[in-house]
Image 1 (cartoon, rainbow, N blue to C red):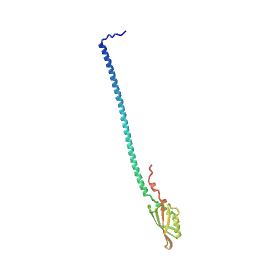
Image 2: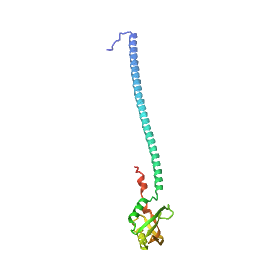
Image 3: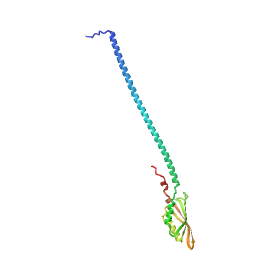
Length: 204
């Protein structure tokens, strides 16, 4: 049996209109909520992106500061290397004359004494030689002069080679007959000190 609608058509139409309005309101509210959610989501993404940009800027600033500090360190190291090279150049043929004179006083033959000593740095003038030493001395006889030469060539003096007597002649001191002589020798790299490396500090 079919149901019979006794309501006037106007009432049914009003109800239908209200249902449509309710659906529109619900749809509008849902749309607004969706917009709010979207705005919140994108605001969150934008804030996160801004934070990431700030972190990247700070990281870049740290890198720039580190590069600047490394550049300063490199400049200081270059300056150190340059000054170290100057020290090495200045002391390239450095002979410790104090040690040489001390050895002379200690090893001088008993019947010989020296009246003068001169040391000259050769600065590459003679291959293999860094300096030349010259002596003027007195002995009580020619055997004493020979003993002097043997002492110079004994290896007791670091780097000394080629001892030579250029002049030897008899003379007198008071009533004593003596032999005056001039002699020379060459100092090789064995006589060079490592003073340059001692003066230059180690840098890691």
